[in-house]
Image 1: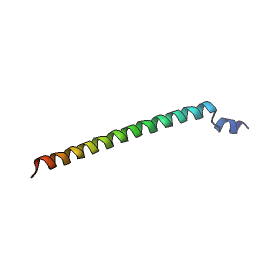
Image 2: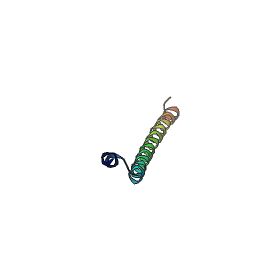
Image 3: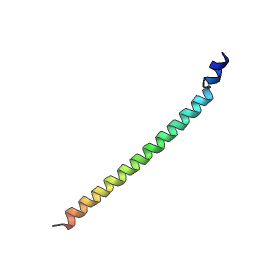
Image 4: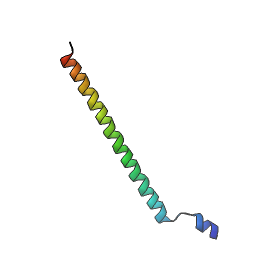
Length: 55
């Protein structure tokens, strides 16, 4: 039973890992959304410039 107890995760450890996981996912999602917004804004500006100034 001692080996099982030594390898089993406690509830506190599970909660810590869960919190770290959700924090990492949140940061990655935020970075992805910011990146997509920047790219889409740049493409919109490029199309606007071409439509207005290139004849």
